[in-house]
Image (cartoon, rainbow, N blue to C red; front, side, top):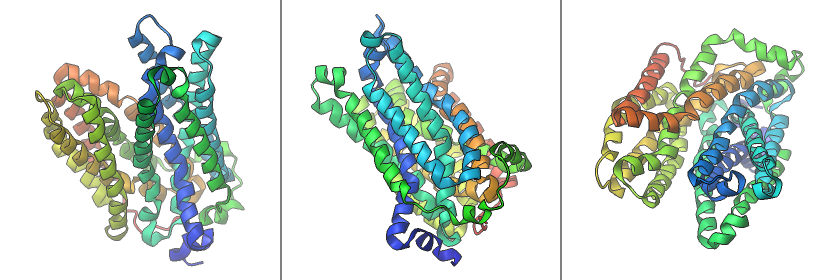
Length: 434
């Protein structure tokens, strides 16, 4: 087997190549579909599952269950990552997508508070924790799987479907939520119609399990499998051998702040500071997601020719220089759709610069025996700290000092990131994963 034909030969030709790419990325699609659809429909079922005399309290409780899912991520990373390094990537990819599907099914069939009392919100929170636990393993196992199947010549491009799946999942969830709320009458929607998108998520997980059932284990893991005698706990402990690499993963993932701020929170922010109606913000976010989906594979392809660091540095510099001007454009009376769409799309392109290469950089930093653990643990911890808190932090900073304070927070993250890339992050293009 030659390095440059690895994906095709390992997976059985062109059809196997496509199945490897889609199967490897599909779990990340499920993860982001689940998280997005919950966010879109939380306001619909809040009163049924988290009843209160005050509708706002119900909504806050419903979104609190959304946030709880982030607590499951570090736990999932600590448990699932070393298992993937011990027993293989393919086995754990099947496990993560099963858990995600069970979480969606639990939400879809959960009885209401009126039917089973306090058990209803407990079940919803448990389902979110299970989905968070699954997500805590899915990301790093999938990027490890895709990168280890790829050739060194086009590794970032071959692994880009995993990051591309984020944008596609948000678009699909947006479409499903829009169709559900449009075509179900209000009474039907609040009684049972909201459950349909979650049933769809469970069904998609079954399809994802089918896709993954026929995938081949990665060549890199097959080479070390016979010599991988360490226990899962020992593998977890062994990542202490790579403190610089763990630090780099954590710092790079700090840029998840920009993703959640731009791709998730920006419409709410534009409504808050510029009075933009939510429908227009929604449409602008769709355009931003499309720009992101185009940018990721294009930038990944270029990085396979010129290197990863220019894109990591470029993303940090762009946000360092332009966050305040862009956010200031939203803080105007009677904000127009055109202005919002411009800000949303430009930010999405900056994010694509970073996300097009970060998964491959992570994979290229660690040896096969600890690759999943080395990526997953700092990634999940950082995502919980900077990703899950981004909307809350932005809202608080806006109250303190407007877009300047939000921008200073983003710029601080970018300054730390830029310094790390300039002085610590190696150029990893062309490294052997074996």
